[in-house]
Length: 281
Image (cartoon, rainbow, N blue to C red; front, side, top):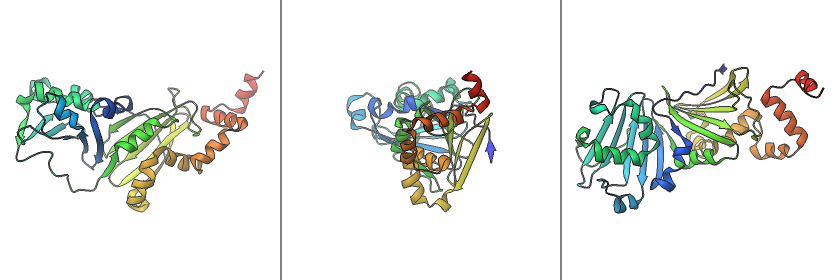
């Protein structure tokens, strides 16, 4: 199966360069994305300093961002112990619409500060404390450690995490030095894309000439415990096994050989034998 590998930015796109700052700079203790069939839930747990050292009217460390293609809602507990919900959509009164959502998604503490300080007139009280109980439908959880492991990997130049119709897409740009045999796209980038829904998981990678190779799996067939412990925890390692048929460590061992590196460069850039002869006169 082949398809175009052309990631698109939409209002829900979160860039790793922003996400990487959440825990050290945004007083975030942990976070996780729960991918449901109809929406995604970002659950953040802030550190105690959020309550102790900021003027935010927040009475709990737990804040939830629920979003689909056109709407975003933020729920939290106020200092009075009551729950609050703030919802945004293109029709939101007061001009807080979809154009601000991408900023809110990338900077959750800034979003919380803006909402509680400037837009409380648009927030509604909820019965009891918030966040509410999690939905019981099937979902896949992407933990902060899964995403930060991708962002810190030596092969990864950048990534973005975006809402799709069925779930989420994790689009990864590889470094020039990556040993993965992923070819350049029309923009000169080496791209891979992980697709995640509650039922299915997929991997697509650049195959040259504007094409992408793709593999997909039913999560239940993989086994949910295996999927969570062996695949989500090491997505780049999984990509090595799928694309090359070998473990990452074995491929890296070959990469120490300069002849292998040359062959891999030729394959990933799509340079043919004729081009090699011409280049060398």
